[in-house]
Length: 185
Image (tube, rainbow, N blue to C red; front, side):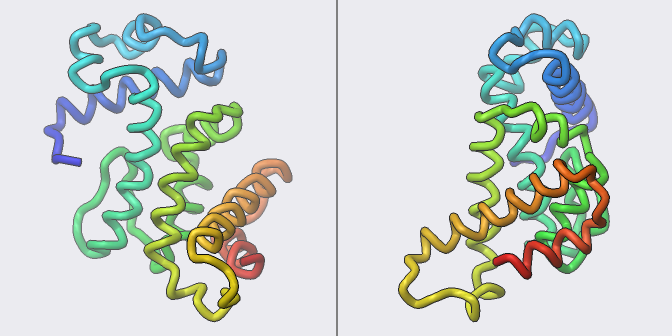
């Protein structure tokens, strides 16, 4: 993602926030672009200058989270913020759980509102992270398992760990969740 100036970043953040707020009130399919731009206080042309459709907006929101995590992997010492700012921990999975725990940009609303589209985007991006981290799971993989199955399995364990955390009241720390995740793979 190319670097955005401060004004563009603020506009994107306002649009993301508007979508997240609307998602807490109603189903994604019932939200209109008109409602998003009204809540974000931006013009229609501004919305479409940033996002082709509301589906693309949802995908971009998910990608921004994962782009941030990927940037932290590539440049742990460099600046990597997008919508999410932090000092990244050593573990990419701990990094992701930390953002989810802090509920950055109300990301938990997206996960808990049963948005199949968001979950699909989330899973696609998660699989890319898993693939980049496969060496850490190498000693646990059976030779009989195809790599594609193994990546899907690890991503599923991450998602199930996240669901467990959400369903049991979000009591565990990111470090504990990361430990559960590693033990379950």
